Image (cartoon, rainbow, N blue to C red; front, side):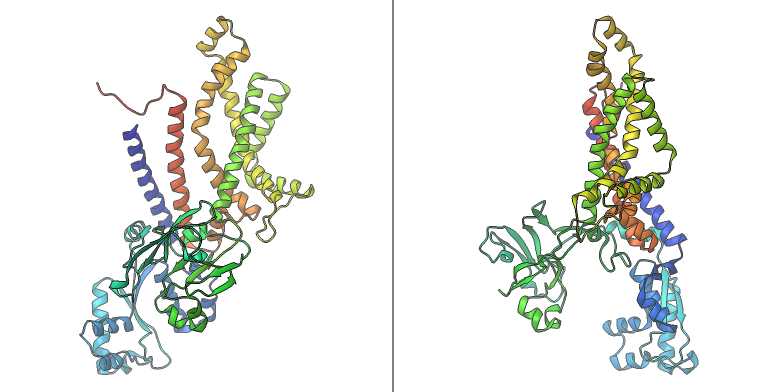
Length: 519
């Protein structure tokens, strides 16, 4: 079984990489990159050369190309000792046209052009209405190769925090510290924590009263930065950060200052120079540059909403679908069987969006909430999304359970059981149901996955703040990083579901073995 799992994992990883490659090819290669500015207010406010420069800066930021301004090239020459500051400032002054450049400027512009064109870059010089003293109208750009982009994405997926991350901290001050009494609680409450200095996160490991009660920032996923759905926030954080109303409480800051605030000190991250730049209020609260904190909210994350709705819908589907399928099989051709068949055909024939809207209308008519609310959440708002998500699974389970049980009734072991004097009820309970349940058990993990991926439509209709709705918004807002990140999330779930399904089937049926014996 061990060899089988390793083989499955290897195939799964390869499949995930292929899926990400295809999605990257679609969003970066076939989709108009200009669409990413559809909801960018900064882009619409700019014009002329400023808009063009901003456009290239954003394209670099979000992974389309490598963008090198002429001024950065000159700065690198200065840092390498090949150019002094006075000459650098003179060379940075670009005329309205190339003919208006000084001899010094022409020399370094030619060097810049020759170097980057030899590296495969396109060198662009924008027409200027006046002299540009910062060299901003000249730059080089080169589209990222799709294979390099994929390699960079995969190799940067996981970040392991370490004491060498932060800049501006003396080496003798870098390190880790452990305490039994977390300073966030005033230092008088037993709460172990590991803190770092020189790390990206201040708290690497800590405990609190929120599930799962123990939290770590040592290993973090980096799925890319959102630029429209949740601007400038990593996709993984977008999926896992809490949502809802702000929750304030009494907070004791590192300086000992106490305030009623929603700041989450456990989320503190390093920002060089932020303590000095933050002014008196920041210096009153913090002792170092670990000043960037998130806000405590009372809602769940997008991932939590999707998982809860998905898992409950699967439980509902199995609790209803399997018993109804058994009843249909045992009363084949009867009223219940005919009604169940009509329901199965209805679910299969009608587009999911149509019956979701139909049940939304019916639910609204009887007083159930038809949309989610993070401001005023209620238990009733979960009912319609869960039912809508469970409907196709119920029909599928009814169909297959009915089919399996009818097929098994004609098996030789059932005939022998009848000949041995067993009643139909005993045959169904002890033999048929057990064998019929084997393939259904295999599909349990896949059903959870199907509920989550099916929630893309359901969450959009009911405005559920989950991962499925996040993907829909990302597609409509051309947020490529979120599209790729959520696709990776679903691809990983698919691989895990397949492997878990095989394991469950092997546990249910001892005849199934993952090992092969050679002759």
